[in-house]
Amino acid sequence: MDDLLLPEDELPAPLRAWLAQNHERAAALVLIAERMPDGVVLFRALPHVAPELLARVRVTISKYHEALMNLT
Image 1: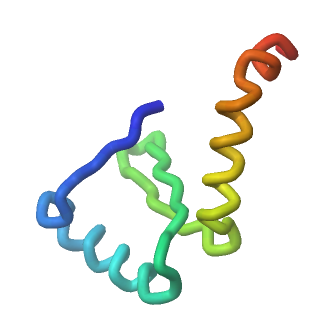
Image 2: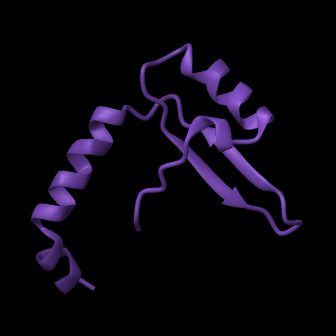
């Protein structure tokens, strides 16, 4: 999955406010975006997931990608 990079001024005002409010708690924010059946998109912060941990997981998965794919 590719990264999505958007200028902040292109985000809807409610999303900018939500990000600003949640960003006060940490320098980086891990979140999920989920499309709900009714067409609404849910953004949920994952405050107990450290961005540093995700970075290490990505490196590990990249390093062992072929071996992991052979497990399935």
